[in-house]
Image (cartoon, rainbow, N blue to C red; front, side, top):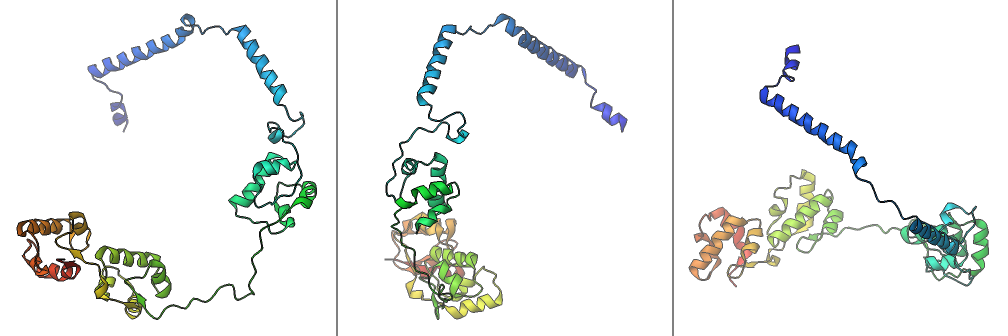
Length: 301
């Protein structure tokens, strides 16, 4: 074991020269760093210029001072705002309007956060007192000027706030969205619903229920629910024109893919145009199973 560790510290001649050269470079850099302050001196500041800057800064402080020394730190740099007490709506007043009520900036920020960030609505003057940063004495001072325009929504009796959802007798898969599938068919959650809709849109529509269940690996109960509730309308599927479809449109179809799309277009170029969907059988690499799956999704129009 000791011999293994010693092996890490054994160097050949070239490695020893390299370590020595590196050490010399590091020592040289350290020497330059130590000697640099003796040869390079920063310029001395102009005392007259510094004095002028200090005087200018002190004059600015005197001009903009709005509070006394014992004012809390969060108010020391706030600009002075003339207090004007006038009727206001707490749901629409802006930051400067709040300051004109004689309130500090942190109260204005708390007010706007309470209203805009958290979506609170003031339906009565007493609701304004819920603003945490607003002191009780400040609230009593501004309360007579509060004017509310918002109307509190009418509360429904307990038990009637939520209407019971009644699922439809069946679901048209041609027009259904993910929300409808999720709510109307037991066992179908958002993930399965999204996969069903995405595949429908990529295909152009479903021809039968087996296409819907294809590749989903669902529990038997969920599959049976889909068979009972879904309605398939093959006549509503969206078809692609063999004579007009682009390469991108063809390759996106789940049953076609990139290679078959290229073969279909090459064969179209050789023919000039497709006269019937049956001619797809002559496309290279086309077999009976592929043709049976894709033929209903194409037309020659």
